[in-house]
Image 1 (cartoon, rainbow, N blue to C red):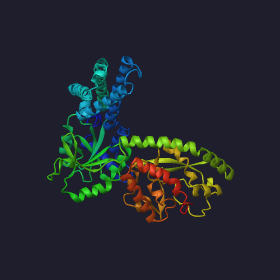
Image 2: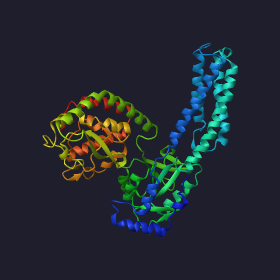
Image 3: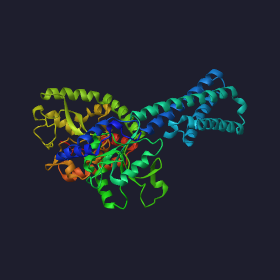
Length: 511
């Protein structure tokens, strides 16, 4: 699983030629091989954490469902101990999943080798029934319940779980072979240290890491173009562009902790990416407490940065976006219809205005707004910011911009997934302050794009909305956006969403 497809292997001469070809315009494009590899990994993968999480839910549902069917068949609905049976079946199903978890039944190696873990599954299921028997004995109620029902449930439940594990093992192996389920990693830093690290990772049984390539600022004399069969795809600066094309999960920095200055320089460049960043500790002399490390198999890593809003958090946030976007569309539909009519009556041109803005991972997205400017004077690039009494803004436009009604179509962006309801506000791709792009004003500005941008955000409810006409305003907005990313929770999203209408009453900075 952790090797590139053999057809994608590259010779040192080919890598050198491609790298040389790319030198003419390194700041804007990748060399041909890096572009090819990035395109190969453009498709999203399924997270092993998500797969094992879904399996927990499915197993719980199977056990609960089969138990309830035997209860209905043997006893009848509410015929005897009407609430006790369902409660016991529910608690037993929950207990079984928890015991499977304690027995490492949801680890990747267990899912890939169900035959070797069947004994643990049997022991776990037996322990669940033993626990029920002990509780019933001490409560002196065992004689009240049907032994036949629980015997049938034990046998059928065990068959269902074992069968599911065998089927899932086949699917997981297939997903691993075709790249659908894996964690994609890039090695930062080449040479002997990177080779040792790669060999160590490759030797780990049942790991889900696929190494996509190596990036290093050093020349070929100090960092060979091929290390352990993997190509050096470019410099660390080019890695930023690579990670915006390929769906990368992890960056592993293969440098000793003693190279403190160089490590800090790399992290300063890389922290803006929405990926896990790990510092390889397999060859470091310094020893930390075991809980300081995470592991790929038995290879220790120091956790530097974690991808924000990942796995089940992303599912919860996406569910939140869909539910509240639909509510918002329904509640504000009369306002949106009235606004569309007013725009049409006030000036010629389309009702909606589409603007290209920076989205998640610095990708360019199209954001919808109600048109607030005269069509012939509209500025899709936002190169010239709207100012107070701007002559380009229509009469209706002034009102809808003051009240933020012009932003209501972005509920559809959130529903379809290009925006989130809450997050850093997306800025236009050419937005400037004093003829400088925002990322030239604020160091680390693109770290705002580690999460999906939002219709509203933490900066907006704290007063940083409207015209960004000074460098200080851009810095403060970025500061609040980064605070939101580092401290995200669903509660914060709910708080921001419900405070937004109140904060919109302050229209001082909205033109």
